[in-house]
Amino acid sequence: MEDDEPCCHLLLDNETIISDDSRLNQLGYKQELSRKLSAISNFSLTFSIISVLTGLNTTYGTGLTYGGPVTMVYGWPIVGIFTLIVGLSMAEICSAYPTSGGLYFWSAKLSGDDWGPFASWITGWYVPNTSIGTLFSDF
Image 1 (cartoon, rainbow, N blue to C red):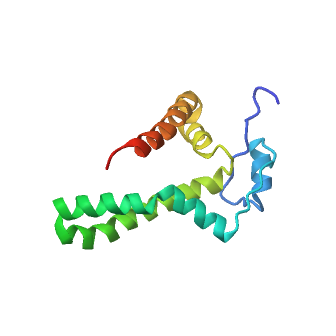
Image 2: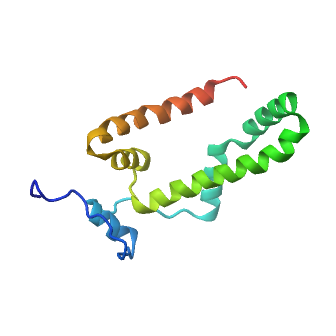
Image 3: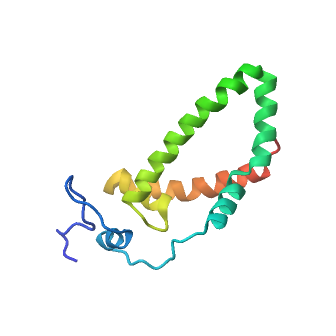
């Protein structure tokens, strides 16, 4: 690749992508991992990540103690809508950059050439440390 040639093909407004394979090829990657999950695999992975039982105990205890029933009745739908908006935004980014190292690659590309490596490094340390902190915290 020449120095003046961009590292990836940017999509124009009228361009569409036929498959993830072609987009990965445009980004300079080759499809290597299988991206197929059955419905039960998807449910199991999602259920284990969100930790429903731990989250419900914490949320109900804090909400009822400090906010009362009003917080629980109106807080859940409002926060749920905002969480859905964040999830849809991340799904849109994932469809634009369908790589296996999603968060690291997204943060590098969305931050630009100057701040990309630093943003990717911060993301690389932030994600596992928050997971470990959540795992060992006492709710």
